[in-house]
Image (cartoon, rainbow, N blue to C red; front, side, top):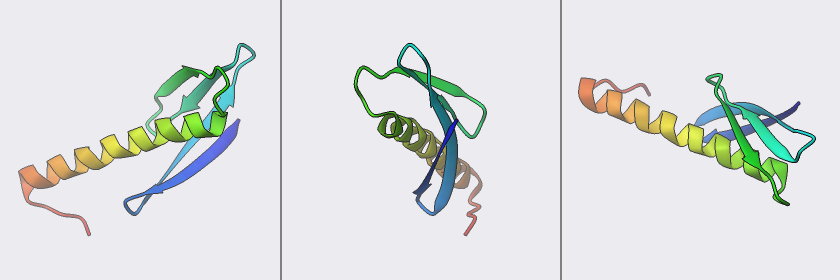
Length: 75
């Protein structure tokens, strides 16, 4: 299992990923979800990073929605 860390808007996100025998990438996201992609020549780390950035973006949008509703901001 490989580990990937990214920083997105001041938060660090970590995911684990592996490549299966049939050239599929399996990414384990921080919330326990798994995403799978057929690689077809794509570099595994780049594809895993794409999944992790998409996850980070959804987390950021979720935080902004809560802040907008409640007026509370965590600095």
